[in-house]
Length: 257
Length: 128
Image (cartoon, rainbow over all chains, first blue to last red; front, side):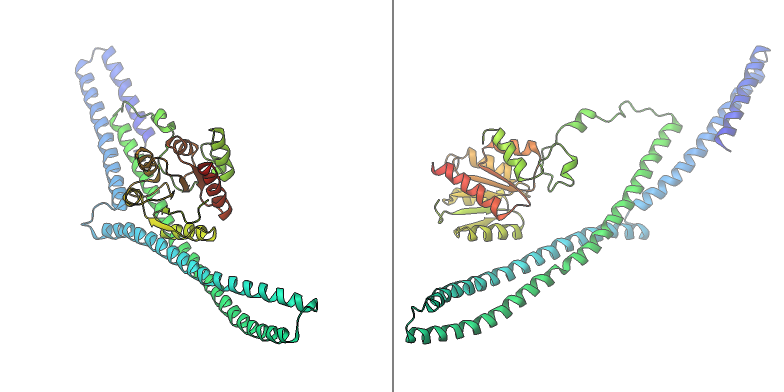
């Protein structure tokens, strides 16, 4: 029966009750009151039954009970999500280390090449200025020959290291996919949670339960949280965070730093 | 500034410790040690003679801000220069660090130049 239908019926009973009371039909009036009661109970049982079923569905989807195979599967999705996020940490850490290995092995090579080129340039300038004796020139041309060979070989090493750095970035594709799947799971859980809260709300409504303090504790909600938060998303939308090193410096200098 | 000064780098991520260590080496500082949170850093600081502490804020175990407070409360360590290198960017946090006696504050992501500037500024004051 629809809510409107039920309401109309209640109105009918109320009118009948009023008429019976006005015309002094006490016994009939008592019967009508009993009918009213019965009606209220019917509606209540019906609604509570319906809500219990949906609540059960929601809790099932929420995966808390691990004895049921379907729920175990859901539970394992949560564990799976944690494993996946750990995989992201491992992948990004290994990529960072690979990249730094390659950079660390490349830097001394390029520094060495730069030093040798600088030293040769000094001698080369002397040659251009015709300040070089023939035996010095022979020595220089030998050095240039050696340098050119070294430079060719070392450039190949530098190139290989740079390709290695490039390849080490392949984690982005894999971690991106993993993070997307975890985001989907979080969104599903959010929907189930909202359903659960809505359901609990309608049970209160039907049974007439009133809670004393349902208004959010605004004082607490607005209180600044100065615990660690990690990297700030969209700092431009917040006024309690700095947007970069310049802001930090300005704030510290205003404090007398 | 003494390039041989002994520096302790505290961060829970080994990659970040490695980045800071490399940047310090580029600046000429090669005498560095590492710890992965305040709990492991504090005994190192107490038992050895570090000249400079660079610490993250958000770490499991003891956080960087608590480490800073412990350092300032310790008779032997109280004047140790401390640079905070962290992603924590709330104004209250920066003020809290300043009140706890931090010598410099660098927010991640940071540049090599920012790190160098802060270190130079800290030791200009310490040496003055």
